[in-house]
Amino acid sequence: MHSTMQVIVKVAPAALILMMVGMGMCLTKADFVRIVRYPKAVVAGSLMQFLLIPVVGYLLVLIFQMRPELAVGFMILAACPGGPGSNLVAFMCRGDAALSVSLTVVSSLYTIITIPIIIQVSLDAFAQNENAVQVSVIRSGLTMLVLAVLPIAFGMIINRYKPELAKKMVKPVKVASLVLLLLLVAAVFVKQGAILFDYIRECGIVGYALCFITMGSGYIIARVLGLPEYQKRSISIEVGIQNGAMAVVIATTLLENQAMAIPAIVYSPVMISVSFVLIVVTWITRHGLD
Image (cartoon, rainbow, N blue to C red; front, side, top):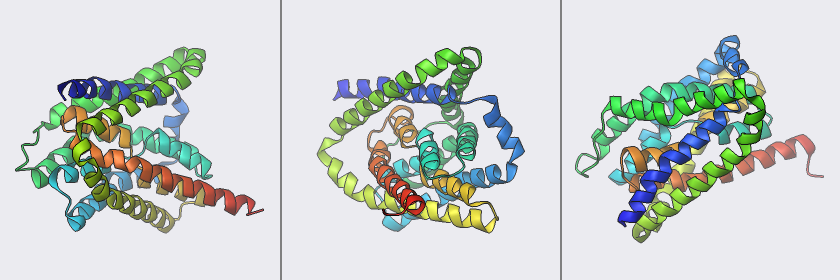
């Protein structure tokens, strides 16, 4: 088991860093210009990611009375909005892909502050008697800076000064990060194998509840704000789909607790199934059944 833990500790940061470098290599100055040019949609989406998701996550944890380690893991998942996957889903669902990317960029910046705070609040609320690893907000923030923001900046620098290299490297980097993430998930399965299926049963329904409630709420709020349909779709998807990969890395690396990574791992098939349904519905409404 000790060797499994060593694999997790080494693989987790590498997987997330590679993923963030790949995302950075797809970003340009124009992605940041849009944030200033279209502030209403960006601000609305960011506030929903910042406030709505953790609040819904907290209420679900209480309603379903999740065991402490899963409750903390679920809150970590709720603290990790968006990601490259949500950008792809927004594009395939005929949403505002540019807005989706902008929201991902903004969330990657403010989560340096929000994730450490949510982690500490969750540990205090749910894991006081579970010998959970206590982490400082400053240490957590610095960890997020190294794992997310700096790799994105590095990828953007490559794209800015070596665009041809960036085009060639994007796919290999994404494939490598996916392979490392799969290895990480396998390591967690080995470590938690004895009680894994109990965890899956407990987390699955909560994951679907989080996805549907946040996605529906995001669409309704965007509609109340009078945003156009394609922006409502993007905000709904960005609010409804969480960055499970980042949550897994935080749980296994920062908190050194594999059980806390289970909600994010279980969330992956939830996200995939919901995304598939959205894409199919979008295709049918556009082309019909024939």
